[in-house]
Image (cartoon, rainbow, N blue to C red; front, side, top):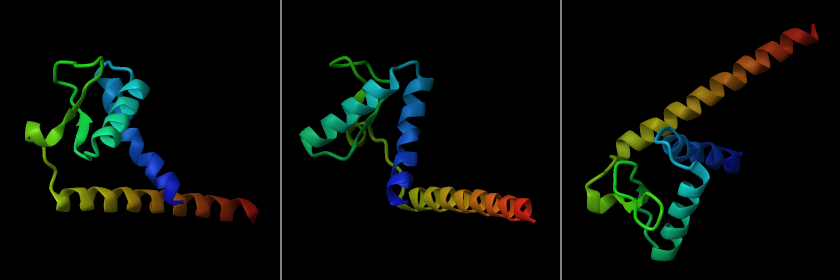
Length: 99
Protein backbone atom coordinates (compact mmCIF):
# COMPACT_ATOMS: atom_id res chain seq x y z
CA UNK A 1 0.00 0.00 0.00
CA UNK A 2 2.83 2.40 0.81
CA UNK A 3 4.55 1.68 -2.49
CA UNK A 4 1.31 2.33 -4.38
CA UNK A 5 0.93 5.64 -2.55
CA UNK A 6 4.51 6.58 -3.47
CA UNK A 7 3.84 5.63 -7.10
CA UNK A 8 0.77 7.87 -7.11
CA UNK A 9 2.86 10.81 -5.86
CA UNK A 10 5.21 10.26 -8.80
CA UNK A 11 2.38 11.09 -11.18
CA UNK A 12 2.59 14.78 -10.25
CA UNK A 13 5.97 15.53 -11.89
CA UNK A 14 5.05 13.27 -14.81
CA UNK A 15 1.88 15.27 -15.46
CA UNK A 16 3.74 18.56 -15.03
CA UNK A 17 6.38 17.56 -17.57
CA UNK A 18 3.79 16.29 -20.03
CA UNK A 19 1.71 19.45 -19.75
CA UNK A 20 4.84 21.53 -20.37
CA UNK A 21 5.43 19.66 -23.63
CA UNK A 22 8.41 17.71 -22.32
CA UNK A 23 9.09 14.00 -22.33
CA UNK A 24 7.77 13.00 -18.89
CA UNK A 25 9.71 9.78 -18.40
CA UNK A 26 13.03 11.28 -19.54
CA UNK A 27 12.57 14.38 -17.36
CA UNK A 28 11.64 12.48 -14.19
CA UNK A 29 14.48 10.00 -14.75
CA UNK A 30 16.94 12.91 -15.16
CA UNK A 31 15.64 14.52 -11.96
CA UNK A 32 15.99 11.31 -9.96
CA UNK A 33 19.47 10.64 -11.35
CA UNK A 34 20.62 14.15 -10.49
CA UNK A 35 19.09 13.94 -6.99
CA UNK A 36 21.04 10.75 -6.32
CA UNK A 37 24.27 11.96 -7.96
CA UNK A 38 24.33 15.30 -6.11
CA UNK A 39 22.64 13.95 -2.95
CA UNK A 40 20.29 16.93 -3.22
CA UNK A 41 16.54 16.34 -2.68
CA UNK A 42 15.81 19.91 -3.84
CA UNK A 43 16.32 19.05 -7.52
CA UNK A 44 13.01 19.46 -9.30
CA UNK A 45 11.37 20.09 -12.64
CA UNK A 46 12.02 23.66 -13.77
CA UNK A 47 9.70 23.86 -16.75
CA UNK A 48 10.24 27.60 -17.22
CA UNK A 49 14.03 27.40 -17.09
CA UNK A 50 16.46 27.24 -19.97
CA UNK A 51 17.30 23.62 -20.60
CA UNK A 52 20.78 22.43 -19.69
CA UNK A 53 22.12 18.96 -20.43
CA UNK A 54 18.97 18.25 -22.43
CA UNK A 55 16.57 18.28 -19.46
CA UNK A 56 14.81 20.74 -17.16
CA UNK A 57 16.15 19.48 -13.82
CA UNK A 58 17.25 22.35 -11.59
CA UNK A 59 17.80 23.15 -7.92
CA UNK A 60 14.55 24.59 -6.61
CA UNK A 61 16.23 26.05 -3.52
CA UNK A 62 18.55 28.25 -5.57
CA UNK A 63 15.55 29.41 -7.62
CA UNK A 64 13.70 30.39 -4.45
CA UNK A 65 10.93 27.84 -4.95
CA UNK A 66 9.76 26.65 -1.56
CA UNK A 67 6.69 24.83 -0.36
CA UNK A 68 5.66 25.14 3.25
CA UNK A 69 5.50 22.05 5.41
CA UNK A 70 1.91 22.76 6.41
CA UNK A 71 0.92 23.05 2.75
CA UNK A 72 2.53 19.72 1.91
CA UNK A 73 0.92 18.04 4.93
CA UNK A 74 -2.52 19.32 3.94
CA UNK A 75 -2.05 18.10 0.36
CA UNK A 76 -1.10 14.62 1.52
CA UNK A 77 -3.99 14.50 4.00
CA UNK A 78 -6.47 15.58 1.35
CA UNK A 79 -5.13 13.04 -1.15
CA UNK A 80 -5.40 10.30 1.48
CA UNK A 81 -8.97 11.31 2.34
CA UNK A 82 -9.96 11.24 -1.34
CA UNK A 83 -8.54 7.74 -1.73
CA UNK A 84 -10.39 6.57 1.38
CA UNK A 85 -13.67 8.00 0.06
CA UNK A 86 -13.18 6.27 -3.29
CA UNK A 87 -12.47 2.97 -1.55
CA UNK A 88 -15.59 3.35 0.64
CA UNK A 89 -17.74 4.02 -2.43
CA UNK A 90 -16.22 0.96 -4.08
CA UNK A 91 -17.05 -1.13 -0.97
CA UNK A 92 -20.66 0.11 -0.95
CA UNK A 93 -21.12 -0.78 -4.62
CA UNK A 94 -19.58 -4.22 -4.06
CA UNK A 95 -21.79 -4.85 -1.01
CA UNK A 96 -24.92 -3.92 -3.00
CA UNK A 97 -24.02 -6.19 -5.88
CA UNK A 98 -23.87 -9.27 -3.63
CA UNK A 99 -27.43 -8.95 -2.38
